[in-house]
Structures are given as C-alpha cells and as structure tokens.
Image 1 (cartoon, rainbow, N blue to C red):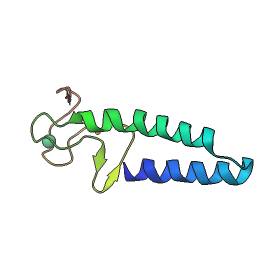
Image 2 (image 1 turned 90 degrees about the horizontal axis):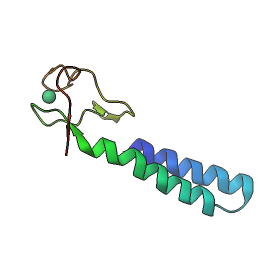
Image 3 (image 1 turned 60 degrees about the vertical axis):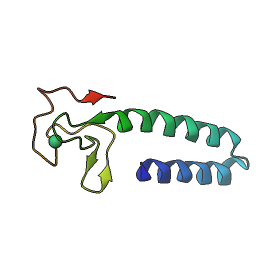
Image 4 (image 1 turned 120 degrees about the vertical axis):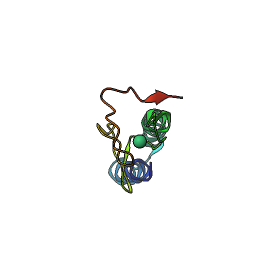
Length: 82
Ligand SMILES: [Zn+2]
C-alpha cells in the first residue's frame, strides 16, 4: 500500500511538471489506489490470516503462491475474500 501510494504521488508530481496541472493525474491516482487497495485488503491466508500480497515489508501486486508466514499452499486453498 505504501508502495502504491508512493507511485501515485510520483505520477502526480511527474504529470504536474510535464503538463502544468494535475487534476487528471490526481483522479487517475485515486482510481488506481482504489483498484490496487481493494484486492490487497481482501485477500488473507485462510489459515493464519496473513495478507497474501505482502512479502516481508513489501506489498506486491500479485498474491503469494505460498503463505510467507505459515507456509500454506495458497494455490490449493483459495484465499478468503472478506
Ligand atoms: Zn498463512
């Protein structure tokens, strides 16, 4: 999530410097953050509840295959979507 936020801020700043106004970039960033955060917040390991999108301290945009905390094979057990 922090990575996506940094990316969104970078997008805003870059577009702001290139085009002079950042309204569109800001809207795009909000939409992007919404799309990125929704699945990240919803998928957790069915056994231990660890978020499957986090590898150590870093958030990734695709779920882990194997839970980084308890080692559960998430390919066979579908992550809970709550
Ligand atoms: Zn787990």
